[in-house]
Amino acid sequence: MNNAPVVCRDLHKGFPSGDVRIEVLVGLDLEVAAGEMVAIVGESGVGKSTLLHLLAGLDIPDHGEITIAGQALSRMDARQRSVFRNRGIGLVFQFHHLLPEFTALENVVMPRWIQGGNRSAGRSSAIDLLNRFGLGTRLDHHPAHLSGGEQQRVAIARSLINSPMLLLADEPTGNLDTRTAETVFGWLRSLNRREGLTVILATHNPRFAGICDRILQLREGRLFPKEPGNGGTNPGLGAFKVNAALE
Image (cartoon, rainbow, N blue to C red; front, side, top):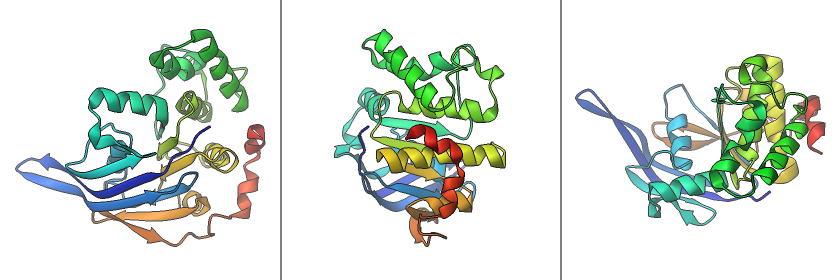
């Protein structure tokens, strides 16, 4: 699995609200090293999702530059950004956004089918990912027949099917109970530590943020360093027993 550095320079992004315009990001700068796991924290509505959408190329900034693995998103048109996202960026959201009419296996393999290539090989890769995430017996289950944690693991597997350089996770545990949230976060941290995947995580959970390599606080449209509670070396990480499946 590849990884990628991320660089943002002087990002500005605002949205109209009635007769006024709300400026969400104002001159935001960000640097994330390849293989680093960074937590973005801040109050609801401060712009965390907006930032991740810009990093994913789902939206474009009003001003500024985003570079991922040396590729400037501003130099791409909408189609090029879509292709780049499909091949190089994994996305995990608070709500899994699985397609209800498709099975777990079909949901995971869908990005590979969109990319093209050998459908049989894509199916084999999806099966391998689901097995690694402890879902080998759930391949033919539809989302409605999976637990919340299982659905989120399917979503994580889907985000990895094309071996992305970067994983963007927007409150991926915010809709889960405490035990399931710890399991899901354990998977994300394992992927980062054991496979060197670059991860940018937006979270309200201070414990999860503290296990990341760095914490950045988003306020007043910019990012500010925040001291991790444990320097990213929380011994409690070992409590996520499900991590062992990734070894």
